[in-house]
Amino acid sequence: MPALRHGRAPSLPFSRCSRGYPIGQQSTSNPDLDLVRVNLSSPIDEDYGSFRLDYRLNDKHAFYLRYFRDQGYLQSPLDVSQSYSLVTAVPQNAVLIISGWRGPT
Image (cartoon, rainbow, N blue to C red):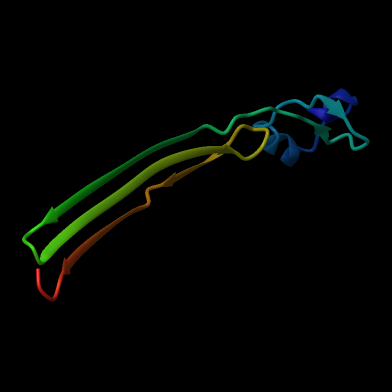
């Protein structure tokens, strides 16, 4: 706690809220404030898949079906207390097309 290094006791509300933060690595001109630097990573995990089906019913009709799905997780650090946000994204879509031909075959 910065104030303790400067030989004075911190205020009670400050000492309660500062328990979750690391001790500073560099002093500042403010006795209640130190600088801290932390290198944290942002892991990301992603899975992707697709499905395709093409089928010709007869000489004049056909259809196709496509389905795509992606699932990803990102863990992003927010501050030096090592709290993080976790983002989960699951975009997906599908298409079904039925087509027919007019005219002579």
